[in-house]
Structures are given as C-alpha cells and as structure tokens.
Length: 333
Ligand SMILES: Nc1ncnc2c1ncn2[C@@H]1O[C@H](COP(=O)(O)OP(=O)(O)O)[C@@H](O)[C@H]1O
Ligand SMILES: C[C@@](O)(CCOP(=O)(O)O)CC(=O)O
Ligand SMILES: [Mg+2]
Image 1 (spheres, rainbow, N blue to C red):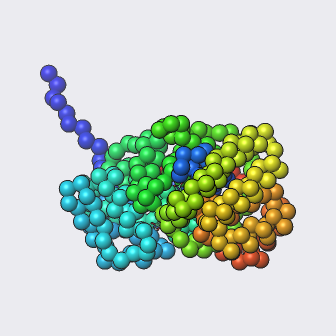
Image 2: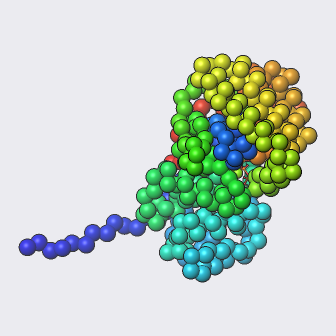
Image 3: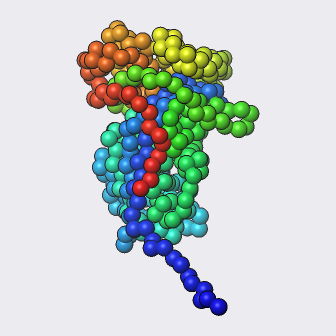
C-alpha cells in the first residue's frame, strides 16, 4: 500500500492586482435608487501589491499614512492612525470583508495614476484591487463576481448607500448596464462600438459618501424631485438604444440632458459647469460630470480630441485623458 502523501504548495509570497477605474456615461446617483446606469471600465489601472511581511503595513504614494495600527477584536477589524479622509475606513472594511485576520502580517502597496477621489471610481478600484491581490496571496480563489460583491459591501459601508456600479465595472470590465429588477441587481455586459471619449480631471471637493447624502437630503426635502431620478433612468435606457445603433449625436444630446439633471440635484460645481460648457463649445457631441460630482471628472464625447483637450486645459483641468478602448476588468498576477 502506498504512503499517504501530504502535498502542500509553496505559499505565495506576493501578488499583484491591476484594477481598472471607470467612467459613468449615464445614470450616476439615480442608480443608488435602483435606476439603470451605463458604465464603462477604462484602462486606467490602480495597482495593488500584497506581500507577506513581518508586520502589517499600508503604503500609498499620494496618501501619507502614519502610525498605523491594526486592531482585531473577534470579527471587527479596525485600522487606526493618521491618514487622509476615508482611507482608514475603506481599509478597515476591506480587511474585515476578507476576514484576513490570518494574514495580519501583510504589506499592501497601492499605486494609482489618478488623484485620491476623481469621479472615476478610484475607491472601487482600490477596493477591488486589494481584495483581489490579498485573496490570491491567501490562496483563496475568488471569482470576479465574488470580488465585485465583497467590494460593493465595502462601498456600501463607507458611503452609507452605494450601488454596485463602480465595483462591478472594476471587477468585471467592459461596458455594463447596471439595473435593479425588484430586489435583484442585474449587471448586463453590453457590446458597443468604439466611443471616442475625452475626460477632464478637476479637484474633487467632497467624497462620494457626502454627495450621496446631499442628494438623499434633497430628495427628502423635495419629494417631487424623485421624478428626476426616474427621468435619469429613462434617459439611460434611451441612450443604450442610441449607443447600440451607433447614433453618437443622440448619445451626446442625452449626456447633456443627464448633466442638467445632475446639476438640479445639486452635485455640480461652478468649475465643472464651466468645463462642460467649454468642451461643448469646442465641438463635443455632449458632455457631463462623471461619478458623484462635487468636482471630479467631466466626460466629453467626440473625436475632435485636440480641440476638446485644449478647451479642458483652458478652463483649468489638472489632467486630460483620451479613452479609446475599454478594460477587461481586474487582473491578478
Ligand atoms: N491612491 C489611493 N490610495 C489609497 N486610497 C485611495 C486611493 N485612491 C482612492 N482611494 C480611496 O477612495 C476614496 C475616494 O473615494 P471617492 O470619493 O468615491 O472617489 P472616486 O470618485 O474616485 O471613487 C479615498 O478616500 C480613499 O479611501
Ligand atoms: C454617485 C454614485 O452613483 C457614483 C459614484 O461614483 P464615484 O465614486 O464618484 O466614482 C454612487 C454609487 O453608485 O454608489
Ligand atoms: Mg467612489
């Protein structure tokens, strides 16, 4: 009789995830209330490296993270220390959601080509990327759907309310129609021809959580504004038809309408409003804010890239990104 052999693979020492960001073409904010949204996963990646180490550490270039300590009491994971904004809350929930208590001695390194908070789903990309890389390090094989689900839980806890839009885009990639059917959320991959997009980046002055709360307050104060939420959902479905039939002029027109409705929800700053008008004057077929607003990103549709880029720069854009293709979702190495 043969010996029973115990086979154990060599533990992985480090892993790296590339998690894409997104641009919202239609439906942000309304999607939080279950209305459809159209989101594109873009090849602008947040890179997350995880490595087994002697003690826990978290590093991210643009964020200074000092005196970090990880406190674990039963199922609750708390990260304390000095860091900007919501970084510690995001990471406490990420670590808790992974329940990676067993790998408390991990070094996490984030590098992002975007500012911290951009209207381009940097929060979702950081979350998806960390969950993907840390789970691989811990030899857990998670599907992209599971990564999206865990990351969405984190966004919900940090933001108070959140749709699965950004986390689905980062995990699954492509162009997605996100909608709710009763209690169930549907993430539908859609096939679209190339959409020429130019994105202008401006300082985002509030977090998504604050902006989602602002919209909720407005809807409570003026319940008739719920009709705006409905209309955003309707125009998203109309835009989907236009996109699928390649009618870019109509897509642009509907982007402009969507922007106006977001403005009436109180999430558009003067700087963003000026940028939207400047790129329209420069010949964009349409332009709107992407993401939660309060500054952040403006997405313009049009292939006159030079004119649109120049218009963005003239009104003070910190960066201009030209998007020609979509990303395929999170990749782990
Ligand atoms: N480079 C980064 N390093 C660490 N955390 C980041 C980074 N970029 C974004 N984040 C996280 O995302 C949060 C910003 O989220 P949010 O306001 O939703 O911006 P966005 O519109 O880009 O998703 C930050 O407070 C931080 O927790
Ligand atoms: C406003 C919202 O619809 C999108 C937020 O996008 P971002 O975090 O600004 O990239 C919130 C959500 O869908 O959870
Ligand atoms: Mg976000």
